[in-house]
Length: 132
Image (cartoon, rainbow, N blue to C red; front, side):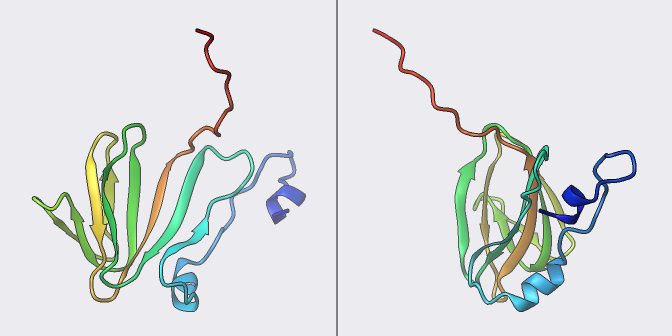
């Protein structure tokens, strides 16, 4: 359990707290690619991730039909596509990726680390087949 779960505020409400230090995670982690951190707090309304793409790596062009995403570049650089109109990204850039937009990322020579934040997706639910 996290400290907030075991020690809520005086009124029983959750309290704000620092979740991670992105600079330390980026500097200390030797994972070449993938999620270095994920928001996993119970009862949350958001999903968030700290992602590392190694130098020259990429996230293929895709479209997110349902969710707007905020992307904050914390280290490295590289273009945000579509390839026809790439936009250079650098540390400190805050990018809005509206739902329905086409996007892809390519990491520059030092890689690319970024935080994404979006509304939490509902969990998968197992349904029944419609009868024919």
